[in-house]
Length: 359
Ligand code: HEC
Ligand code: HEC
Image 1 (cartoon, rainbow, N blue to C red):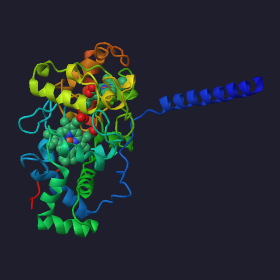
Image 2 (image 1 turned 90 degrees about the vertical axis):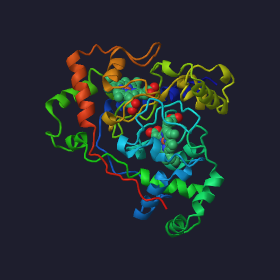
Image 3 (image 1 turned 135 degrees about the horizontal axis):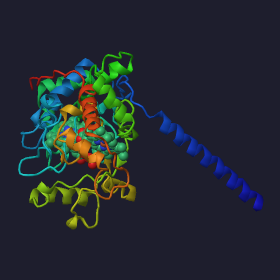
Image 4 (image 1 turned 90 degrees about the horizontal axis):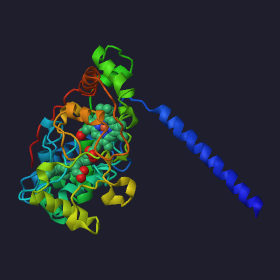
């Protein structure tokens, strides 16, 4: 008995040792990396024809119940695939309750949505179509609306060898989304050896980002995100605190996530809605910072209008009661160069994507 226990303790110690080691090397490893080639799932290879079909569907208002809204309404190529609103646009007569993230580089995301409730772009695409406060469309119905269009029907047959269905609609849209990738961002050129790709001010900002500012703790790798969730305690947006339509949407989301006290909910609980784990209480996904200069307003509820406001938020140690951030004591000069880094280094060339002709 004693011997079995000591073997067990020994095994635990080994496990602990490797865990700490793993953690330490993980910490050491944190750095920004250039964008690798886009990951493409085996079951949805990209072809030019599929991308073109996905682009049409992305811009097609048939995907919404009343024919007013396409994916591009809220993810507008002219606005870096956001809608530039604090709280995103909404299905007519309803109100959205979160900010629309950019779709630039979302091909690299391990979790989609602020609360990470979808894992792949294919899976994600069905959510906004069904959502009563986004496109409010019925999935069986939209299949028929697409299938009745001969040009679409023939394209699906050619590309997938099958008739239109919602899974294939999602696949085509996902293939298009995988083309929305930052091109030639100065940070990538810099990391690949072009030391002149960043101005001296941006280089100083990079030092703050990876040093005193501690941004690198969560914004690292090629996606500039740890792909995790953190409760920074970003304040609720007071503008919407008493707006009925906003309250309705938040209650609805809490209710469908089986949150018992949904009638009294006063905050967006973020990832907690999905996992019900205390660590996820008010935790949101670390967003990518690529293209961040073009994606204002910021945070899951769009409460900050500018990068200056975001930097001030981190500088004062985040929101009230958070357990992850500490005050940074950045000087005005340090804040300025940090912003220069975010704006200058992380912005790729603008993608020129024009709305296609819809059949
Ligand atoms: C009415 C506005 C609206 C429409 C229409 C819309 N979206 Fe979104 N989109 C949002 C909002 C808001 C979020 C964030 C919601 C959340 O996290 O809970 C989002 C999130 C996403 C994300 C996750 C991005 C990330 O980094 O986590 C993807 C991908 C996406 N939308 C693609 C689409 C596609 C494809 C369509 C069309 C089928 C679409 N959206 C239609 C508003 C919209
Ligand atoms: C503990 C992890 C963590 C650290 C450290 C951190 N961030 Fe973040 N960052 C996040 C999370 C999580 C969000 C989203 C929060 C939300 O919406 O509630 C975010 C959001 C942002 C946004 C908004 C992006 C958008 O698209 O809305 C910017 C800009 C940003 N961070 C920059 C920085 C900078 C600059 C630093 C360093 C001064 C930093 N972050 C440090 C986790 C972190």
